[in-house]
Length: 64
Image (cartoon, rainbow, N blue to C red; front, side, top):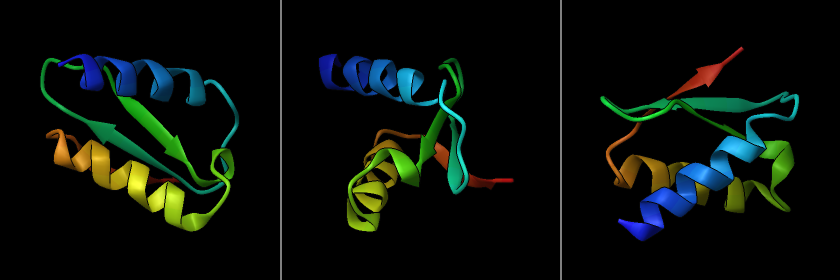
C-alpha cells in the first residue's frame, strides 16, 4: 500500500508539468494519474511507469 501511495504522490507531481506524450491513468476511488514521457530519462522508463500503474489496477489511455 505504501508503494501505491508513493507512486500516486510522485505521479501527481509529474502531472503538474506540461506534457507532450502522456497517458492518463484512472482507477475507481483513486485520483487520476498523468504519466508523461518527457519526465523520464528514456522511453523504457516511461513504459515501466505505465506498466506499474496498470499493475496497480489503473487503466491508462493516451492523452492528447
